[in-house]
Length: 131
Image (cartoon, rainbow, N blue to C red; front, side):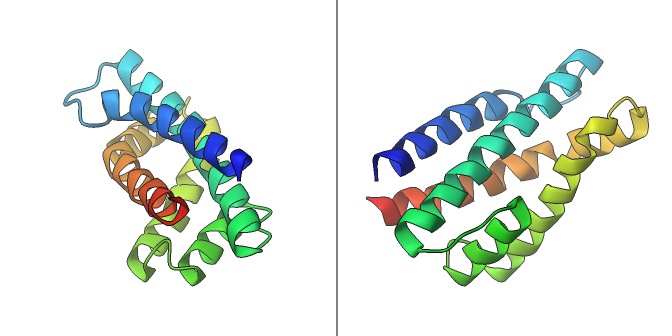
């Protein structure tokens, strides 16, 4: 249980840094790139928290972000709409390695506010069930 608590704490801290930029209007290129980087590490910390939560509290093995999303839907951590959005978020995360492409970088940056809200929803569901 300590491992779940620690992973949730790390993910929440990462999300806080993402939220600092998420709703900022009119990103400079530097802010856009920082927001994308923060999305990357927040996504990683969050899905690892989900993975640990699912294993330790639900007995479910999720070896990838997409399997964690599907298992979260089945476990009631995400509803159907949110799980579909989370799958799209997984795809966007996979594309962040290509943000040298200006158009793609802007498309991902435009989604960061929604991703931040979704990650908050996901973490909150786990925190609520954990306590």
